[in-house]
Image (cartoon, rainbow, N blue to C red; front, side, top):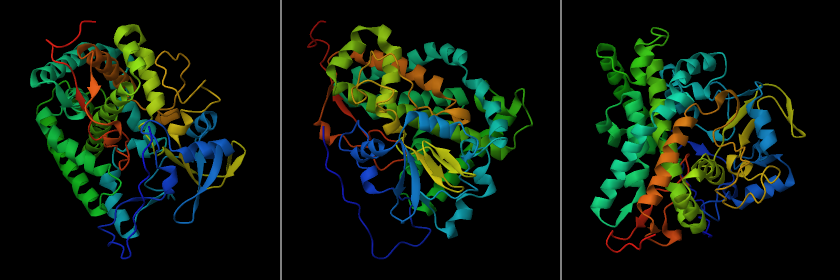
Length: 433
């Protein structure tokens, strides 16, 4: 499946700093996908030259692009590469100086451990990681199953077609993360809208600041309510649990907003894009429907094959470091190209193929090293319940538009589909299987 590459527009009169978006200065060919499921062709060409190489940005500066799995692991596990986006300059992301203080003030940084280095990262992460153990995530499976089944029931009751994103892919992980954190589910419309605004690449910076402040105000009010009336959610646990008093309110707010955002956006897009990929590979969809035992391998393969984190992660060298034969100087910006790394032919046979029965699957979709995604077991549990249940409930599920009409989230920092029109046969018309 191919798509045309949209031209990058330019303006003669640049907007004022507060109305400018946060620019990602990658050359457009490194972001333009020819197929919705494959990395941009230019990334494969860069990998063909070397697993670590220099790329010139639109600004004229150079960054180091990592497209090899071994080299990516080396960068992500090396403490000489910093994740600190607040205090270190990332050549890839352009923010006018006039807006930097508004975006990165002390309250905005509080609790944002994904953008911190040890020891501060370690201090904050250890307070949260105990909530996301494999054992606890497995204990959630009955409740996840109830949520999935309820949404499938609602889809079936509403007719024989739906937007899968709005009816299923987005609400399921949203409800799960709300229950896990202790966030009222009725707030979902607001936080989904705000999150969508924040992760758009073209959102004006002044709007980013405004929406972020709205999210922070909402969470401050919720934290105050949890202080007065604790429950069994994770937010209350941070306030009243074993580590009570170790976090400021701003840190609790920052951690909670981070988990709320990541906890629904990433899984929702994996479900939506994953179903799109399965519908375009019917033999793989049939394998998942007929063989429930393949679900675990299927989830890992979809995570590898689709790589919704399509820009980054990024790191900054804190001293001269040699990786994959390239000397990366102190201050150099490194971009880990997860979609291309997950297609590294040195680690997968026929990496461009979607193969749900693939057994050897050391993908990098959850990162590596100290910043490896702490919610990965929750995402796996949700996908392992949601996808098999969907294809069993609607055995004749099909795309309800032409594949090229599915709107892609290539304008967002988290890739996926904005919507996915699907249809299925009415029960009385469905062919027995």
